[in-house]
Image 1 (tube, chains in turn brown, green):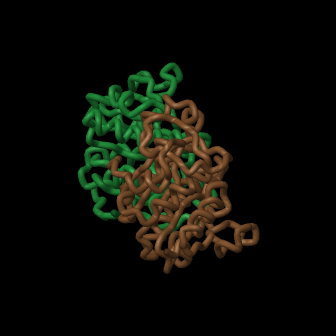
Image 2 (image 1 turned 90 degrees about the vertical axis):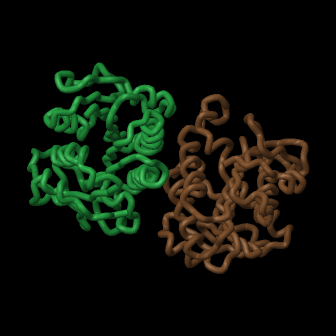
Image 3 (image 1 turned 180 degrees about the vertical axis):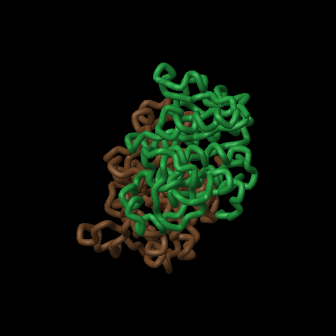
Length: 217
Length: 217
């Protein structure tokens, strides 16, 4: 598939580029500053401005089969990046005729009643709201074939290749494992229209994704 | 009507309390700190915490005929107040069986394509996004009988009693005139499900509201 990754220079984005190209996809890296992209052997960098209008984004996204949103501002610009940037990219995907949209979200972003009870979430109040808004827009206000991946705390640790999906408690995730799940769901129709929580676990990624069946909406 | 005003100590909130009581309504003032409420002769203050859960808010809102949202953080806590606080108050209103919901928004909050062209809006990028999100949640994700009022720049100037509704350009609004419009729409069914832009103008408020007929959705 021809895949466009928004936020390709981020911690998850870089591993996602690797995982998608290993799976045989042709990847374009949507980045703020193309000259800073370090994986030119794997993907073509293209400038993608999250403060742009949807119509401008749609011009760039035209012709792709799928869009990933893995951009993040690390808390510095939640309203314009994680939230409105994401919303506009959804509108742009629809305008461009891109049907498949995969969102990197955060654990229980769509279940605010759980935020207070999980230590790692209680300290992320504003971030949780931004992801709550973006995820809900994707679920409620678009016709996209979405998958929303909600991992717990991201750690800069080596891939384990194993995860648990559909978790009900907090947990940690090696960043390459999150990237592997994001890549694995791309063509898995059983993940379309689904919100999938995850953290470290015992099931190989491909098996966990192939067996996903829990309707969480 | 029994009316609950969220954000009653704000600049618009205080004038709204006055306008609603003058119109004969029984008003409860939802405020952060009841002891700071200065209009005890007009309305009963009740603590209302915008960081609370919807179920907690719903307990407070039960038994009212209408909710106004006129709270603002002056840019200090847009995600928790203008945005998520507002969303939760909508969920709470629905849980409490309150059907009527009037939102104080901001000029063209639901028309991002206009933000860049109007000087007073271009400098409010994050605020615009927060109001865009809250307004869209009200319009798309609730069954409330809403009216969204979108004034331009608020000025601390005396009431003129006259406005223009359905504007297409930027402009200023005396705060008591905005409060008068908010109060005037309460029982006007022609404003239900409507987004109404406004600024200073020549039409008496009651006449402008009674004659509102533009479907803007």
